[in-house]
Image (cartoon, rainbow, N blue to C red; front, side, top):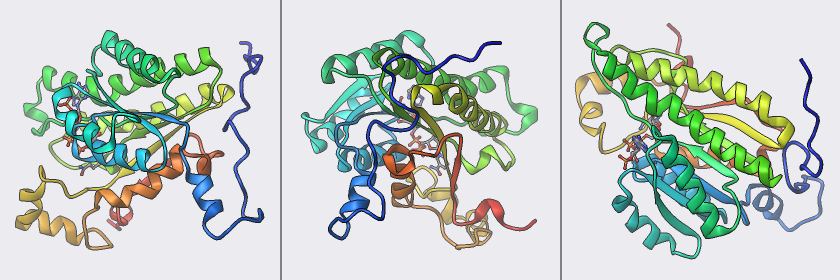
Length: 285
Ligand SMILES: NC(=O)c1ccc[n+]([C@@H]2O[C@H](COP(=O)([O-])OP(=O)(O)OC[C@H]3O[C@@H](n4cnc5c(N)ncnc54)[C@H](OP(=O)(O)O)[C@@H]3O)[C@@H](O)[C@H]2O)c1
């Protein structure tokens, strides 16, 4: 087997520019701000109509990126585009289970901003909650199609465009602590998230030569309107007591970790799994 060499004119693995270091003379805060800046970047966020996707889009936009908000319910994205401003935000329809839809979404982003998306947040996700004995083949396919196959197809299309344009990029795959631990009732979800973690390692290995990094952000349970009722129940409260920090995550807890993986601050990180769960997944048995 031959090993492809660095393509002519391709950027070196990691970054388009040399990030500042702690030794640089700069005003207080300027080094950190420059390290985590996404000015000039174009970020695609799948599932941007959801709780975490909307938060991720706001964070990336706040760090200077132009953002491409993608979801099937494109109407649900209009408010966020209005909030962020049309200059650096657009909404595109995207069904990650449909390869043609992925090509169209990436193409629309490139047509609008004149360059391919170089931060890709694979955030779209679904779950079917049923005991193993009741899960159907359709349940399994529905979850795996979005949470694993969809992430692969989005990463592949985005990477193809970056390689063609000879530009570096950063893929951030949103997995879960359930990619490494299990809980009853979500067989397809845990399998898909575990697969996504290993897929990310594969992407990291194969795409490093093109300057494209791929990492996992693995949240623990984050409080959202969808799970508020469960976490208010006795069973939910018992689960919270098993989290060493004794609280659920908040979307804001993912802000710094996301920026680390998306920006030059994480230039030498690829194939990593960044777990953000208040210690839940390392709680002793
Ligand atoms: N919330 C948590 O506690 C938690 C913890 C760990 C990991 N996560 C992960 O974080 C991600 C976001 O979770 P969330 O809580 O924000 O979920 P959410 O509010 O239910 O949002 C899910 C998003 O996925 C999109 N989506 C679903 N199917 C899609 C498809 N076929 N094509 C494109 N988009 C699709 C939905 O948009 P449309 O319906 O408009 O398409 C929606 O925007 C998921 O990957 C989830 O597994 C969440």
